Length: 129
Image (cartoon, helix red, strand yellow):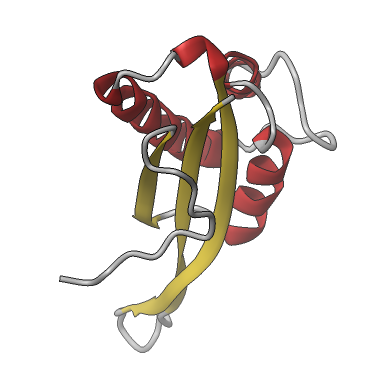
């Protein structure tokens, strides 16, 4: 099994984390969304992601719907981990980061050409303040 390393290591008693591995989303878009929600309280971050998903708000004129769906799933997983640890969910602050994963080619016939698929890894750490 591969050892996962987080970009941010905090006190495990006051933090919870989740790792979205091999997500089929654009790395550039994931970095934009992660930078936007980093430093926010969890309620504000989830509200922003849900508004982006329902196209009520935008970031630089874009909604990033596919990226937001995946990041919201990872964020909800991190929130569940925090509840299981007994952390106060009203005091959690989000630290999110996105990293480039591996690249693979989809096999196709010669006439159709093969396409390159990119994979992204997303890390979310929730710290109780």
